[in-house]
Amino acid sequence: MTETVKRSLRAGLRWTSLRLRLVVVFALVALVAAVSASGIAYWLNREAVLTRTQDTALDDFRRQMQETAAALPTRPTKDDLQRAAGEMASSSPGYSVLLVAERERGKPIVGYSDLDTFTRAHVPDSLQKQVARKQPLSSNNEHEYHLFWQRTSIAGTPYLVAGTRIIGGGPTGYMLKSLDQERQDLNSLAWSLGIATALALVGSALLAQAAATTVLRPVQRLGDAARKLGEGKLDTRLVVSGTDELADLSRTFNRTASSLEKKVADMSAREEASRRFVADMSHELRTPLTAITAVAEVLEDEADTLDPMIAPAVHLVVSETRRLNDLVENLMEVTRFDAGTARLVLDDVDVADQVTACIDARAWLDAVHLDAERGMMARLDPRRLDVILANLIGNALKHGGSPVGVRVRTEGEELVIEVRDHGPGIPEEVLPHVFDRFYKASASRPRSEGSGLGLSIAMENAHIHGGDISAANSPDGGAVFTLRLPRDAERIVRNDEPGADAPGEDGAT
Image 1: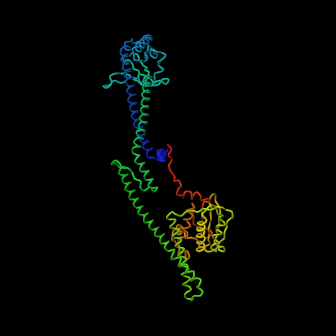
Image 2: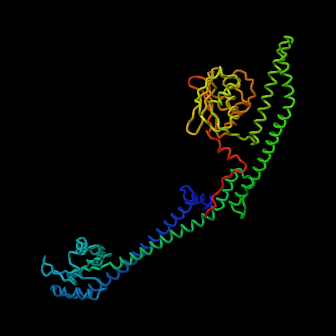
Image 3: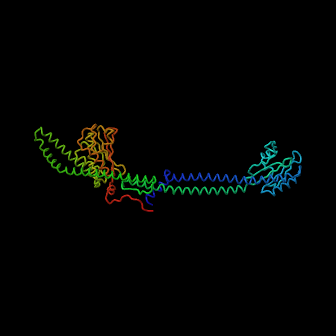
C-alpha cells in the first residue's frame, strides 16, 4: 500500500475530514427524508386501514341494529336477545355482539353472540355511560341516542368497541371488532418502510461517497501538490481540466508555483554567486596574506630595535594582519558550510584529553578550570570539536574573564559540555542573536578583536555532528554555553554520504 493511499485512508477516517463530513451530512439528510416520508406514509396508511375497517364494521353494526335488534319485542327474553346477537354476529364482517335489555327496572338481561370472546366486562365504563346518555333534541340533533365507539386493547390485542341504543325503548347493543389483522398488516408495512429507509440510507451513503470522491479528488491532488511544493519540489504542477472553481484554483496554484520556482531560482543563483564570490575572494586573499604575515612576523621580531615611535605601529600591523588572516580562514570555513561541502572525519577520542589538548595548545591552562573524567570516549571529528571548544572558551575568556569553567558529562547517548564564565552575563535582548554571523553585543561587552564568526562557526560544527549549542545566563552570574553532541556521529556520516539511501515510499499494495 503506497504512502498516498495510506494518507487518503487516514484522512477519510478522521472526524475532521471533509469526506467523512460529506458522507455524514448526506446520510443525515437521507435519513431525515426517508424517516419523514416513511412516517407520513405509515401514518396515512394506518389511518386509511383503520378508518376503512372501522367504518365498514360500524355501518354494518348500525344496519344490524336497525334490522335485527329493532325487531325484538319491547320486553325481550334472554333467548330473544341471544338469538338476535347470534344472527347479528353471523352476518357481520367478523365481530361479536352483545345485546342488553331490561325485563324489569334494575334487572338487565344480556344476550351474547360469543360468551368466551365478548362480555359486558369488555365494554369500557365510559363508553357504556356515553351510549346510555339521552341526547337533547334540536335542529341539529334529531335522535336521542347515537352510535359511539372507541379503540381499546384487551390482553395486548387491539379492538374496536362500539355501542348504541334503539330509540323508543329497544335494547342496547355493543359490538367488539378485533383489529389484530390490521395491526399485522401495519407491522408488515412498518417493516417494509424500515427496510426502504435503510436502503435509502445505504444508497445515500454510497452516493455521498461517490460525490465526495468526485469533488475531493481534485482537492486531494491539490493537497499532494502543495505538500510536494513544501518539500522543495518546485517543478510540481497540476493537470487542469474543466472550467469550475476547482479548475480555477488549480490554475492559480500552477501560476503561484511557477512564480515561486522562478523567485527561488533567482535567489539561489544570487546566493550561489555570493558564495562563489566570498570563496574566490578568500582564496585570492590567502596568497598576499601569506606574504604580509611573513613580513609582519619579521617586523615583530625586529620591533625592539626599531624607533619607539614606530614600534606601536608595527605591533598594530602585526595584530591586524593576524586578525585578517583569521577572518579569511573563517570566511572560507563558512563558505564550505554554505556550499554543503563540509564533511566529518570521525575518530574515537577521549573527550577529557581532547579538551585538555585544546586548552593547552592555546595556553589557557591557568585561566580554565576543567571538570571531566578521563576515559569518556566519543566518536567525533576531533578537529571540529577543537574548533567548537576554542570558540566557546575563547569567547568566555574575552567577554567574561577568567576563571572559565568547563564541565564535561554524558546524558544517555549525548555528550554535554558546559562552558561557564564569571562575567556580567548576556543581556536578554542579545541572547537570541549570539550565534548570528558578525553579531557583536558591543553595547554591553568590551570591544572584541574577533571576526564575529566564531560562535556561528561553532554552531555549524555542532549541527554537522547532529548536535546543538544553547546560550543562557547562570543564576549565580555569568554566561553558560551548553554543547550537546551525539556520542557516536557515525549515523550522521552515513546519511551525508552521496550513496546514502533517501527515504522513500512503501511500494507494497
